Length: 123
Image 1 (cartoon, rainbow, N blue to C red):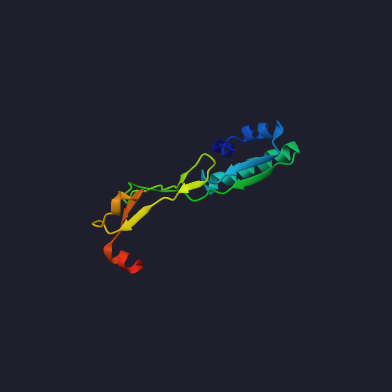
Image 2 (tube, rainbow, N blue to C red):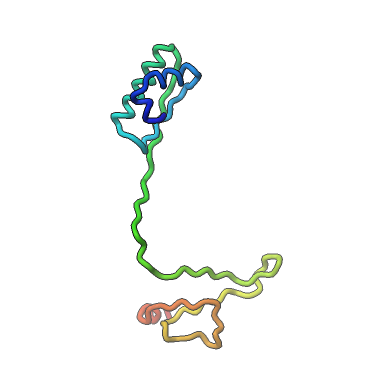
């Protein structure tokens, strides 16, 4: 229901008279006070018209609140080389090492520089 259904009884009455048998209230909008007015109008109009009209309340999900993004690490996409049938014919090669260490013969598809202390831990 639009929020006008809270204050416009005739609007709700006409909806139910026209065949509405379920009123949906979107709880992501308005307030509890507005929802109660909508429900009261639906109940009153249903009773007056002697028609059954259920009320469903659609709960609002979490709202995503974001601000400016701080520049961070670049996302890389690495895929093996495949033939026309999708069969892998050459693996993707990623060089993971401290920034000052270069791959031999530039053999890597992508270079992922990492902290030297962290790198020594994974050897």
